Length: 479
Image 1 (cartoon, one colour):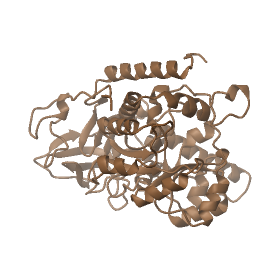
Image 2: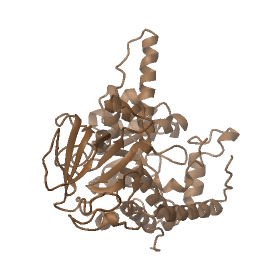
Image 3: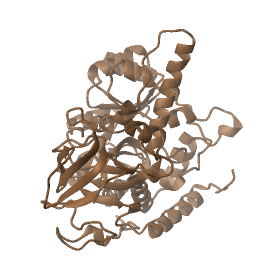
């Protein structure tokens, strides 16, 4: 394939063994390396593990890439120390559905809905404009820089894991570029092998090669999911290939796309399984919901997008009532931010609005969602959906050290009175101070580590210019 543009630059903090000189304003060298110990000391620890508990003031010990101990006080005399006073220490966020290849198109579809409804203002819409116009002209190098920039932008926001739904597999070279962009971002990623278009597209048949070449080992940051969109002809083959390869099968399930009958038929035929990740789940029948719950399928909700783009009302309460494993996802930045604080606030406020409306009408109503539950959907819920709950999602000894430190002394938060409440109702991406993935520092004291961001931004802008010109779309900054 052509050599992709925008290689990340390694900073001093990414090299050097244990015990080496301090770099990047106090960042200990060698973090994440085997045997290297780091003690995160004195923060408010939100573990998301009932067995571990939470600590008003607590310590988290990392050894190599994993969490070794979480307690009110940890003795580790040979460890490097990061003072976390005034910080909230918690697991990184897990995004279970993000179309990162669209990063160069951010805000281009700010007013758009999912499909054309015949009204003039909706002639520019997601299906026709983004998927059938812009995506058709992507080169492998466009895929790479979009994936890379989108990945590091979410690292900056504390999202340490993602399922990238890359519907851009126009050729094996496009697929390889998407994987390379995910890998070079240096965070935990689940490569979603979805469809592509054109004569060179080999979906779903290229799945075996991709898995063998890129995902032969389970002991790596990147894993793989099979896309199985039921609105596309031949989806049965994608499901067959995915299950033959032992891959989870993810798909958009949206009533406005006319999927309900097909989804019902799959439900009645017993085709659902614990390997399914159902994205959106709007407009589906009660029968299909029950079959999905009985099968142990996972639901990924994109609450702001679902409200904004006419997918249908986010089925938050339905998933809760059925006790389904549920996560949050950001979907498309061409329309809405990939910030996870926005996701949690949207989830909890919409759920509580529905409950409050029933309460005010004197009707029976479910419980109001609490902030810890919203955080769980953003962490452990996502880990469960991506089949990574044995590795991430909570500050549990033995799990990988995917950890974020949030500034609770910032102007928008201080004074700290409630840890989950501050995270869900007050914070934003600017509060994400430090980010670890598998024990390695990806953001330090508000600065990304290891990337020449201005250089990468220029390459993303160049990709943006190419995509607009080649797709024949005028770039109007005030449309």
